[in-house]
Image 1 (cartoon, rainbow over the protein chains, first blue to last red):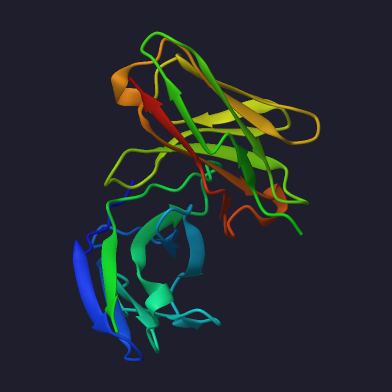
Image 2 (cartoon, rainbow over the protein chains, first blue to last red):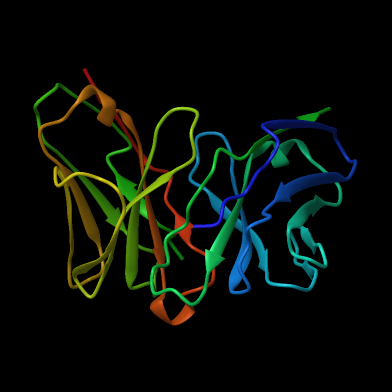
Length: 112
Length: 114
């Protein structure tokens, strides 16, 4: 499986935008980029996913580089509730296997 | 609409014992996956069940086994517990029809092996 690289930790101030980077230089053409986050004492929750074009939903935006070797999850206005571990995951949609391969993620701290 | 529910939330076992964890998927979902999350690490895939059969398996020994029932609920069994089996065990459900969409996770069962 293609791997992703994320910073171990990041800090942000409340109500400011947060840009969480992810490098995936060995991404294949059929890999989708998925983001999940895990709040304290909870299971992971889906945030967003995309293939080539930038994607927006109610939680966040996903900006994908033109060569697809990196992507950025954007939280437009961080709240204290956004403090979590954020996981960037590549998922090959051709394969019958549908499991997620988690790395160690980025621990986001939101400062009041 | 209830999400994914897991039981028990916490349990303590001793080495060599056996444990059974239970999971009820989100309504409308037919596929259940199990993950193990050691402290400070990301979840690791154990196996996935669909139509009452194990469809995919991660790099876990045969001590880890599972079952899926006709109502789509699932159990994870771990035999001959080791100290290293102490972890948060997460269940995730999804719909085969929406196979490449989001997985819904439960809050997990925290297993401590003494």
